[in-house]
Amino acid sequence: GAVVSQHPSWVICKSGTSVKIECRSLDFQATTMFWYRQFPKQSLMLMATSNEGSKATYEQGVEKDKFLINHASLTLSTLTVTSAHPEDSSFYICSAGRPGNNQPQHFGDGTRLSIL
Amino acid sequence: AQTVTQSQPEMSVQEAETVTLSCTYDTSENNYYLFWYKQPPSRQMILVIRQEAYKQQNATENRFSVNFQKAAKSFSLKISDSQLGDTAMYFCAFMKPSAGNMLTFGGGTRLMVKP
Image 1 (cartoon, each protein chain N blue to C red):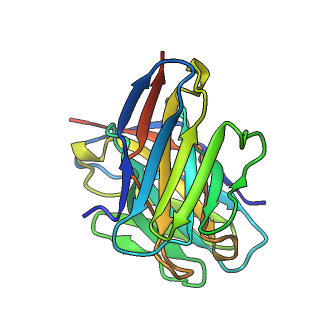
Image 2 (image 1 turned 60 degrees about the vertical axis):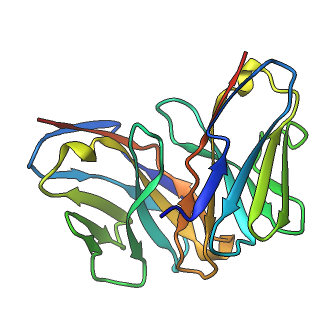
């Protein structure tokens, strides 16, 4: 069964609103989670590393004030797209791995975000 | 920094045949892991197979196997007895434990299995 849960799976909202996406590890604690963005027919692009209890680490070119990440507990990370605009429309997906160096990343089912 | 390259943007194979997807990577690390993930039209990311760099033996999972050539930095995926459900995007990924298990993905290969 799924080990990482992501909600919502699909969001349609008006330009200017903020949207929060949740990523939960279901049966393990994850001190680190990752957020990706994927454009159609392209690979996953890492946006940021979410660190429990500390600030997220953003990849170059990703606006941290636009994409707010909060990792307040060991099982939950949230990505908030603030004042969303049509260009923010995309597929967002998170991942988390069980503790240990040899553990693979498990992915949420992704969130399709459409900004009108 | 690590890079992962998948040189085949698209491939097709007849049902029941065998197909090999290519992946090369570049790293100066000695301890790392390699993965193949499958992304069907539903866009779920599904782990197909993984390989530890310190293991010489190639990983296998049922119809899926890899050819891991560490010196050549090559990590190809072989799918035997292809099934219609294998139609998907396939991503090769590199993981460095020292970077918090962060994955670096290749550009992906779109595989179409034809009846």
